[in-house]
Amino acid sequence: MAIVRLTDIVGVMKDKWTYGDKFFGYTEEFNDNHNTQYPSLLITPPNSEYPEVSPKNGWEDYAFEIYFSDLYNRTDQQNESLEQRWDNLQDLANEWLDIFLKYYQRGATGQETTISYLTDGSLTIERKKEVANDQLLQIKMNFSWRIFSKCFTPVSTYPNQISDLVVWLRADSNVTFSIPTKKVSAWGDGSGSGNNVSRSLSTGQPLRYSYGGGALDKTRLEFDGTTDYLTSDSNCPLTGNDLTMFYVGKANTVTADVQRVVGYRDSAGGGSDRLNFGIDNSTGRVYFKAKDDTNNGGEVTSAFLDRGLVNHIACARIKDTDFSLQYNNNTEVTANYASYSNSDGFTLAPFTIGYIELGAVGAYWTGDIQEVIIYNRALSDAEIADVRGYLNKKYRIY
Image: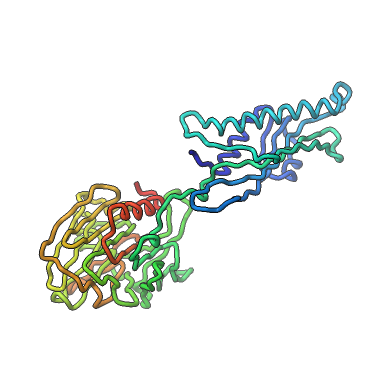
């Protein structure tokens, strides 16, 4: 069943009135227009309400007030009674309403049917004649119209509806930043676990850019690839062998060094970088690597060259000794590391966003990060599809 917005409704209302000018606005604006072609249609901005609010109820009740206006000049008054003139105008109004409602009941050509109907007892007709202008008469039509609305249609399973969420960072929520400089000093965790990330040194803070009006433009944090990163205020919350991680982002360039969205390094495993997630060096392929505390484990790399340079969704998962990586909605790339065993998890140090230390050098992220989601277990395929669905509906990536 199709869903519509107010802009769609008004567009159809105007299209179905073919006798004269049509307007969307207020009566004061209409009265100020002295070049109107009559008979005219005026749609005033409606109020609406949701009679029931539940995840499966998407009905919205619009309260429409429509004005149909026609001239009734001195010559007309001599040849036609006021009652007849009103009847003629009301016939046009009723015809318009019938055509308008049938459009949505049948659906546009090639489109899914949209069910809509007038609320019982809501249709009223009032005949009006301007006192200040005795040559203009009106029909005011009020009705309540119920239609399936977008607002309460279930479209996503949100990350916090899936158990064992431990990190949820969103660029459009809970970000502490300076308005003049855009520099981000803290990024609050939305999982409820308190795993916030921050950076006190202003020279290494990423920049926050908000929605700019484009259809695909979403709030993002921009990392410069040289000094910018954020560190968790507490140690990494991944306490066991299994995990699932997502990010939404875009690298601005491919560099000779690896680039990391999420990184973790501690003293175990000889001080190696034990967990990192981002894009590989030179190729720009999405990349995931994990090592246990005896340095067993390995990496998984996506099959798509340079795809890290466009906005994308990446998902990495470890279940027992199976590693998997998924780029957008493409087929998973998998690998098995039979010696991998990490029952004590990654808990000895903080994790980082936009960076991981690699010995004497660092793997900085050069580009945007919009969202990071981490679970302290291996999600099922269905749960991963739910999270990807939420991210794709939000960021419109594929």
